[in-house]
Image (cartoon, rainbow, N blue to C red; front, side, top):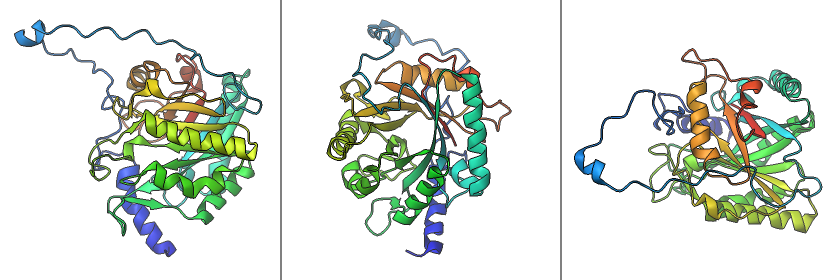
Amino acid sequence: MSSSRLLVSLAAALALAAPTPAAPQPPRTARDSGARPATPSPRPTDSAARRPARPARPEPVWPVAGPEPLPGSILPGKRIVAFYGNPLSKRMGILGELPRAQMLARLDREVARWERADPGTPVQPALHLVTVVAQGSPGRDGKYRLRMTDSLIEQVSAWAASRNAIVFLDVQVGLSTLREELPRLVPFLRRPNVHLAIDPEFAMKGGTPPGRKVGTVDAADVNYASALLADLVTEHRLPPKVLVVHRFTQRMLTNASRIRLDPRVQIVVHMDGWGSPANKRATYRQFVHAEPVQFTGFKLFYKNDTKRGHPLMTPAQLLELRPKPVYIQYQ
């Protein structure tokens, strides 16, 4: 595919991948993600009042009783600070919004801020590349997704190497599946500094094109990805991998309690909603803290978090969260 056609395809994808009010999907505010509104709820009807109350959810237990970290594990000894996006798009995130040198210099500044805020936790910089991009049109194979070229992945990997950063390959499968998309990425995932992320928002079940509703993945999908990474760690004698799963609604991740933990793969459930600091904290409590898996992450949107006059949350504010997120992503 020519570079001009690739850019056109990515421009179409932006309506899906960039969470703005004009996008076909609902805006990714923390309130839309399920945080309770400040206004009181209406009174229940008589019939609703007669319904039996749902059993109370058990109080979440943190930290999770998981496997002990293997030698070479990144988490929880370090905190990952990542820049998200795609170099072919200025709208998908900070990774592509600025020229390479400016982007990397800004990443350096964010890393330094986190080192000052939490001197006891070393910071691991990262570049988080959207490698399979959900599309608004079906494409030749009807999968509503566009695979990035190997050369683009190599380009971002070279940028990361210049900062001793790790790389995340983010997958928005559209109407495809992880079983179709991940094998193609195995040559990159064999590298010790390359890790994986799954975006359920654009993982569509039942044939609905991406962008018309929020998608979903199940524990079985996460377990498949984790097992693939674990096998690579064993086969190629790699340090443990990190697997990030985005989440800002209940249905984005089903049967979370069935996710299997393996010391070769460290799983991060990542709060991916945007909005005011209060709503972001509420979304974190409701969809990340409430269903413990292993580790937690938190996304900050330079533009969407601040466009209604709210300040961008600071490292000090994020360190007040319980559990403290060990993966921080800037978009």
